[in-house]
Structure formats: C-alpha cells, structure tokens
Image (tube, rainbow, N blue to C red; front, side):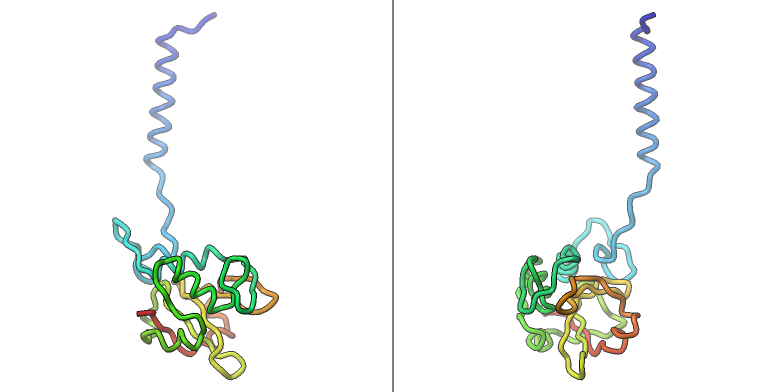
Amino acid sequence: MIAQPAHIIRVFSLAITVLALAACGSNPPAPSPVERGSVGQPASSPVRTTAGQRAAAFALDQVGAPYRYGGTSPSGFDCSGLVQYSYRQAGLKVPRTTGQLWSAVSPVGRSELRAGDLLFFRVEGKMSHVGLYLGERRFVHAPQSGRKVSVESLDAPFYRAALIRAGRPY
C-alpha cells in the first residue's frame, strides 16, 4: 500500500517540530577559562577578548608540541618561545627571553590573575621559567627537554613553591 501524501507531510512536520524543540532545550557548552572575561566570571555578550586571553588560547592550542631549546614555533618551543609565539599570534609583540619578559611586564597580584598573565618560576635557585596563566589556577608552559607543552596547576607542590611573580605585558 502506498502512503498518502498528506500523511507523509504530517509525519515529516512532526519530526521537524520534535527536533527543533529538542535543540531549543539544550544548553550551550560552558565557556572555557580562556573565554571568560576574568577568573571565574563568564564573559558578557558580545565576547571581547584581550590580547592576553587570545595569547592564552593560542598557547593552549600548542599543548603536545615538543620542547626544543630556543624553539619559537609549533615544531618545538622553549618556555619563553611559547610566550612570544602566543602573544605574536594574538597581535602583541613581547620580548624573547624570560629575563626580558620579566622586565617588560607590570606586576600582578596572585589574586588579580587573568588569562594570559605571565607566571615566573624559580628553578634551581634562579628565575628561569615562564608560563601563561589560563584561569582557574591553571597555566600552560613548555616545561623542559624531553617533555611537551602542557597544562599544569598552580596548586601542584612544585609550582606553588617555585612561583615567584606574575605580570601582565603592557
């Protein structure tokens, strides 16, 4: 038996209505820490991002890239090379070395951290490492030879003890 055209149209219309209602009832995904306007606060609409937020997003995209001493590209990064690359992609020129970055930022209190702020760490007795803050006490960095760009927590004992300063590029 061949179905009546009117019956096919009613079934098709009902299916479209059910799908539309299901889609309208779904919740959008929560914004990532990088998409938030400030730590823990959802961004307002329309979303305006800072260079720091964009740099943090670019750095986060590099997770898994290999560490390479002197590296400044996705084929390999050292810590300050990751910072320089990420900020360059975000449209802001920053210095190349960790020491130069230290001198080129405005100090930021730990309670005032925003995505893209630079975190400076003391390793083996001297300031020698930098990472980009993501929000929610996490940061992205190129740790050391033999490892890859990764995300870490400021609450990890090593990084909690090693953090000596945070700063925001001007």
